[in-house]
Amino acid sequence: MNSTNDTFIRAELISFARDPGDGDKPEPGSLEHYGDGLLWLKGQHIHAIGHFAELSPSLPKGADVLNYRDKLIMPGFIDTHVHYVQLDIMASYGRQLLDWLNDYTFPEECRFADHAHAETLSNAFLDEMLRAGTTTAQVFGSSHPGAMDAFFNACQKRRLRMLAGKVLMDRNAPDALLDGATGIADSERLIEDWHGNGRLGYSLTPRFAPTSTKKQMDAAGALLRNDPTLWLQTHLAENSGELDWVADLFPGSRDYLAVYEEAGLVGPRSTFAHGIHLDNGMRKRLADRGANIAFALALIFSWAAAYLTEKRPNRPAWHLPLPAISAQVPTYRASERLKQRTKWAS
Image (spheres, helix red, strand yellow):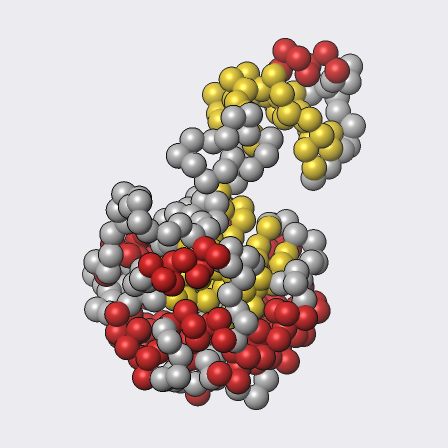
């Protein structure tokens, strides 16, 4: 019989004693494997982990041990880039990035002005993440602050580690999504309410340079400088048409990355989604600042935008969040949701 706070689980276990590093193999001593292990929980926290034979003598007399010896228990996966508001349009056909935004993404995100819809999708999204074994993620929301309250509330109930933020966008999108008058103030309120609340953190989230004015990005950069515990997430160089658009919108900037650099958005707590079309100079600047690139392979392959290749000796490295290749919400479930919405299945 166990105390009300103690749980004992016997199973095959994998754990990490420290950061395994960025190499092809974990750093020596970082990965721990117990073929017959014991996980000892006190409340919501791990009290001890190790070989069953070594830990079991220290268990309280009459301890009730849950037997999962035919299972493998390990830390949850980490998704470094995902949009919770796009759950219902995953697996939808997209010709090119900008077409996909206009045809699918923006109309879908307009629905998140409805708080009840945001609550429903927050719960569905997190249930799918957990079903895939993902317990930590950096998440884009919509531009509606209430949708982020719904999301953070749902995360809190599940005690998940999530970094997320309200999308900032004050131009080049439907009026229902633009936040020019209130975007920064709404972000400040969300930071006050949710950043550091339990296991939650706030990521400032300008969608990408074309949908934010220089004024908005500068304001986001000021928030980042004033609070070094915040994170930053946005998109970078995902599509060649996007690069041309950025060049037209920011003719005074040397390249796409410079737009973010000039606003103070590039640093060790910044994650840039995709980064497919980068030259060596941009890669080096990212690496020098300790910035992060998050890849989403399903998206890259579906648009045939680029392929990840062997490391090349002359290509500067950049930081990759662990794991860089995200454990994403299963696509086939999203496809079924899309069929239900569009009545394809008949």
